[in-house]
Image 1 (cartoon, rainbow, N blue to C red):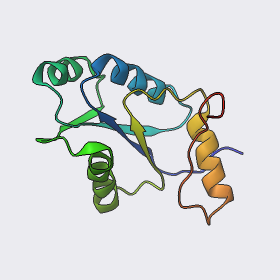
Image 2: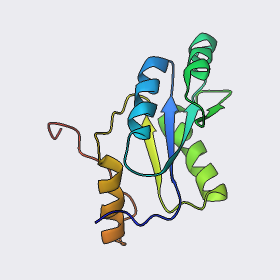
Image 3: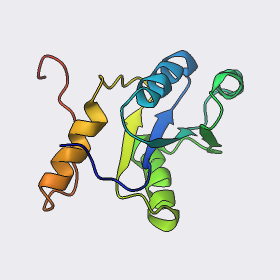
Image 4: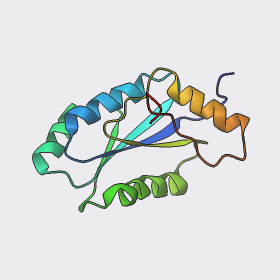
Length: 130
């Protein structure tokens, strides 16, 4: 069963001082077999790390720089708040800057959500099951 999402899935990737890893994560999300809109939230990285990421992000990927490091939850809350206030997409994804979702990951997650409307959120399993 393929997802029936009418709009793009909104993805927020939280970044802090690891532009190379973040660029790989962005590419992994762009290579998913779903329509996706990506926003990288920079959690007040050092300026040189932020600038490197800014220069190398692909066209169409939004970059938001926070003035202070809000931590893991606080940084993701910035993205979630934006999604709740502005987006019309049915699904939202939050991710760390070093996550590498395998092919089909987002499709499987959206299928699980659609098949189980009582679910409020789902997450992939780490390789190896830890």
